[in-house]
Image (cartoon, rainbow, N blue to C red; front, side, top):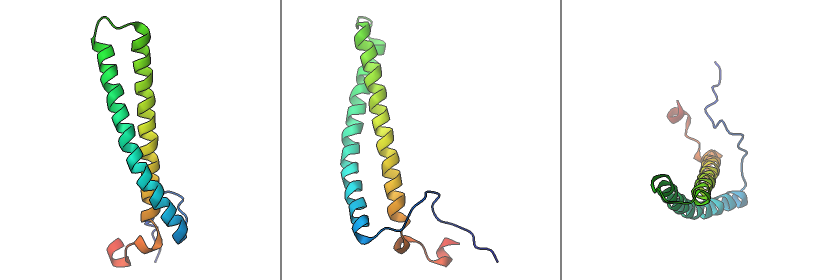
Length: 104
């Protein structure tokens, strides 16, 4: 009989209680920061849409709107990746692993 690995594909180590608390605090902070980042992305998406549709916008304003929209999108994406990793790290700790009959 072979053992099938059903854990995470991330290289997640077992955390101590202090490290888990720090990861939870970081995740809580990140949730609030992601709200701020998404609002900023919505603002720059509006500005980019205006730059694309309004005919009398100067070219430097159009280029800056496109640049800042791309930058805001990168910030949201990086925050989402970090959030996903923190959630996976906290969920894959030993006390959160399912029992054998639930896992298979």
